[in-house]
Image (cartoon, rainbow, N blue to C red; front, side, top):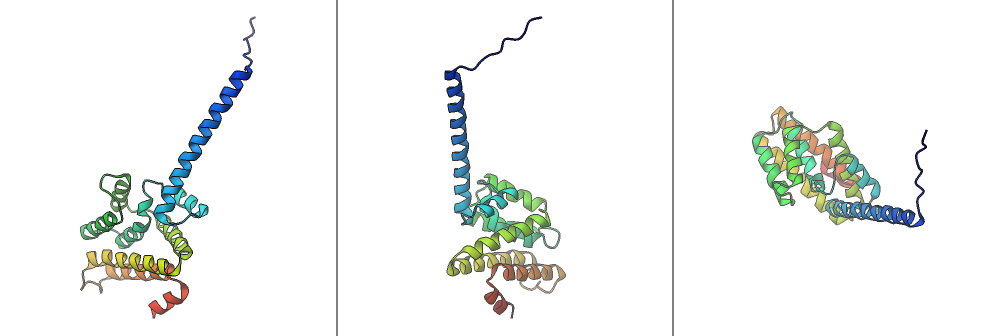
Length: 195
């Protein structure tokens, strides 16, 4: 019976293998750092816990621009469906936010408008936004919050119209926008806004 010949790694083979592994590790780390940098710029936080939480929700460097669009999608879906008017308004606002047609983020947005994301996804995204906003300087946080709530109202108005605020559907949208305002605003300002 013949025994297989064992190949013993030479010193040169060993160092070549180690060099190859190190180069692969460096490339992977550089790619990771580049992805994280794009996410950091888009959502305006460097907190690795927030970035990791966002990645676990399915955000990446291709769709992170949608982070601040998700509350609008939530408002549109709160009554169970997205109207054509809401869809159009969200697409316009997303385009103004840098989301380009046929880009991965645009395709993701279309998917969310066609199929409602889970409540867990909406809630976790809102918590991430809240955490990011709380870390911003006051004037920046206030400006971002005001803009976000104004966009949510635009989506609600797209469906309900100016005179439709008394319908049950629009009452659900109003309640959600009030909840978002309380979530995103600093405690003192939210109390004043609710009064």
